[in-house]
Amino acid sequence: MGHADELVSNLRKERDDEEECEPDKGSDFEYRPTITYRHLLSTSFEPSNPLRVIAHCDVDAAYAQFEAKRVGLDCQSVPVAVMQWNKLIAVNYVARAFNVNRFNCTLDEAKRRCPNLRLIHVATIGPGEMMPQYHPNPDARTHKVSLDLYRRESKKIMELFRSKLSQDRDSGKYVDYTLQPIVPCGWAPCILDILPNSREKYIPFEKASIDESFFDLSVHVRKQILLRYPFLDIRPTLEMMDQERVSEKLDEPLPEVPLYLHEDMMPASWLNAGAWLPDTLDRSRPLELTWLDIAHAIAAEHMISIRKHVYEQLGYTTYV
Image 1 (cartoon, rainbow, N blue to C red):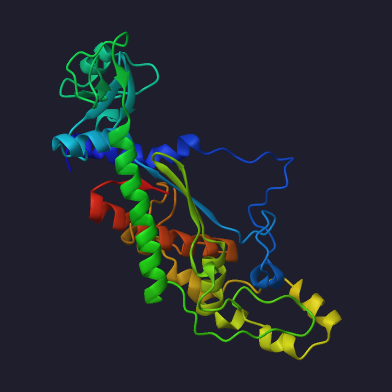
Image 2 (image 1 turned 30 degrees about the vertical axis):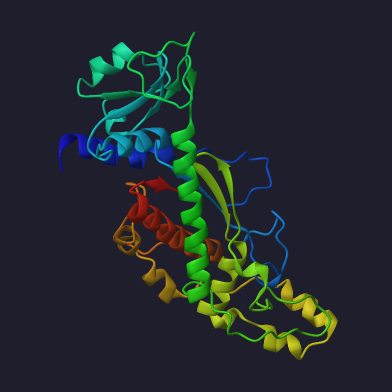
């Protein structure tokens, strides 16, 4: 690994640490919430349900990746930055390794810090032009910025998300719909009680910006927990109870995560799957797990496959 590659790797690892903040001590947030059978089996999607899982997917330095692809540069090895007039608006990770950034770095300073930096100005529309062009020295007084390239690439990514989720759904790769519903007397249908043609077979996602999307994995995660760990599926037991006892049973906490799952969740297995783990973590020991961790792990597993799909089809790296 070269020096730049090593710096890029370190930056990727440090990125989330810099943005991470501890929850307010006085807030209702719980790191280790008590998860009950009601949380697992309910059709509720309220934020108060700890098994509601939302994933945020962002394209790494999107504009820089889009422009690098356009001109045939390898964004994983060549320092690239995109500018608008006299300001940087996107910097890839290779350039960030040389302390080039958007916030307190002029164009001259960026070139000094990274002599090999490839600076690309966004496309602009000049006087009398109908289509955006890449002018060598556009003037803010006479030219108008065009984001058409970025919108086109964003549309491609959204279509990939949609097609990937559709393929996974139709193949049954991530969700098994063969379970028959069991509706205990006196309570609402379980999360598994979804008919094969229901719209809820989809994992909903929505575009947040040109390079960001949100995925609601709540249904997927709870289905997978029940399918992978059937000892948590107490619906047959509920079927034989009266309504009062059903309510009491649903409010009972889930049992502890079995020891064999702790063994399966060794840090090495996550690293091999493409996940990032903090350097401070002891990688020789199994992770201490709760069902919340299992839920997040299942969601991460799915998002890793989506990120891989985007990279294989378009060459863009993302993070979740």
